[in-house]
Image 1 (cartoon, rainbow over the protein chains, first blue to last red):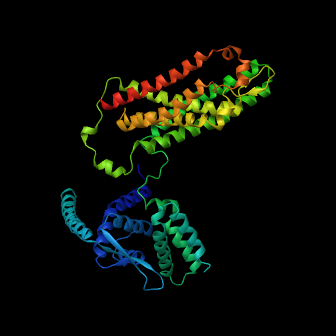
Image 2: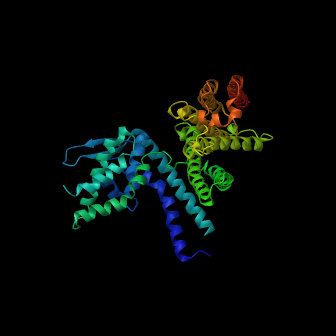
Image 3: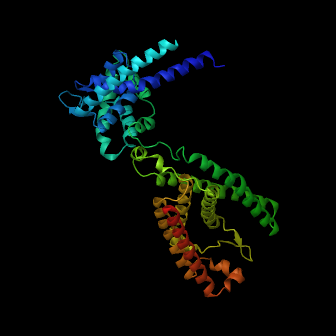
Length: 116
Length: 315
């Protein structure tokens, strides 16, 4: 028997697993306009894609390393900030991820309806 | 600004774990991000807000690990079970036996019970610590030796054809390799232990080392380094399930590092402590050919080992 609290915890961590990949897609979608880390985090959380800073900031670096994002320092304001934007490769990846996402939503909703 | 100290300390703790060429950039971005986040919480006391923000970012060690793809483990999950499997019999089996043997030797030498127990406890502690350190370092080295840089690249290139053939008698081969690695580790620990514990007692009761103490300012280091490398290769071989060309090359280097200095030391008769030899007259009287013979045996053993490694790797 699994207690109620344990079930709650399990569903939280499973939901987190489910959300993990979607953060990348959300970033690739949002960063068509350049944005810096903290502002992007706020935008994501307001849009309902909840993510922690300690996940998002390193993720941006890794996406940049993979060539999906490019970055530029903006020193116009008193606090210099690193702005990220989607590269041409990133746009291509976004397009295919969006397609993948739509397929997944369709398949999963079909599955859950049939077996629900 | 006095509030910057906590942030600075955090940023420093993160970036010092990152590759040098990325440090400045990541530090600057992290500083700005922390400041932005603090500013995004108006009304709160800025110092308290800064503290809160850093707590949310979490342990800087773990945070830094998210930037790199490097495994954050000293001994990875592949080798850990075998590490425990080797460590357990050494610590729970060999170590107590050695300690008891030395306690009994002290008693037979006519030393008091208190003195003998102290010797036993000392052996337990010092030999145990050396054994533990040797095995742990060995596995950490093997973990790094086994896989080339860029694990992801090699994982992508894997195909089912890479699966090793199931060979008859493979289990004994693995067991033999494990045993050899264990023997190398024990040998290393023994060399250190005889240096610190001075187990041999001359006729007048003076404790001396068995090996020539002069070796410690020279030849012992390549020999020990070679032994450690041999043991690491042995573990990597067990993990890989047999010889590979890469491992055979490592093995050759390790054998050269171990055997060549050892053969030289034997040939020049520099291995054993003269004080010990003078007491153990049977060894003292050994003629030159005995030493040269031992040197040749060491070289021959190394050559056979290298030959077998390459032969099996090419199969």
